[in-house]
Image 1 (cartoon, rainbow, N blue to C red):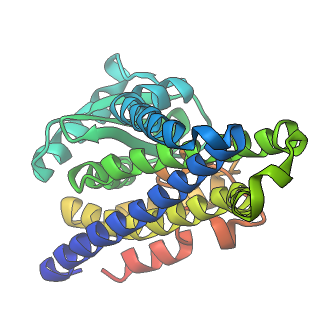
Image 2: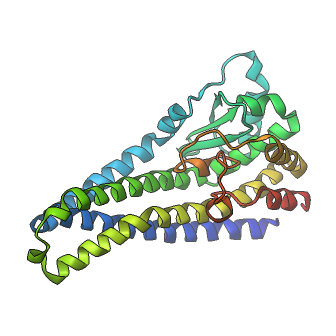
Image 3: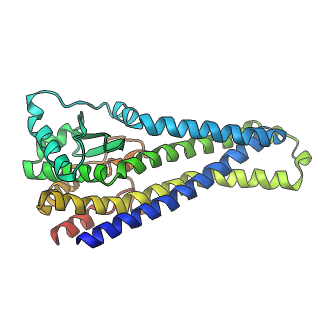
Length: 299
């Protein structure tokens, strides 16, 4: 990928990311409005601003501290000890090449071959690799994987991907809340008092509660697939050896069983989909690994 096309793709990702963020924001606001109406139609004008503030606070808190939550959730521990010297040297060297501070380095106890980056910006970022990946990859392959994660940090993908994880999780929470409010509270209210507008809002709320998780999942998928290709390309530029990453991806395809049991809200952070499902062809957050390998081999 040439320098010009690479930066063009970065700009395109930023524009698309902003658009997708607006779409998810509108869906979340509609869910909040529906929940407020189901809770008490007379309190909509009070509940909506209050719920918006709570949602903003929730999003900000998870955005600022989401990396710690994700690392804790994955049982990641700091990579300390002489056995991780080469890993630290690799991370530091590639970070210097990318012009960013060295991220913190963690290890995840899993036999699967995988890695992820998280954080809100290059100054507050972390890279985590599985113990299985460290055991099974050679140095050039490990360098390719680390370069891929460094790319996500340098391109500020982690910033947006962390926010997407927060919003996807929040959409799921709100959808569940609105369904419970309808069945346990809304179904007992006198709907006749609400009039046609009330009935419309209830129906819209129910539809949104059902489709919102799907919409946010599609947003998550669209954002992640393109960014994976871009990170692969930038990793090849950093290492000057695209076959290293291609070989690593081939081992992941051959050895991984997709049983890391990672929440779908954060699965897009990983270099390879940590879960496997019959619906991966439609809803996977990662492009087909064969296509990624093919593009790397052609560089």
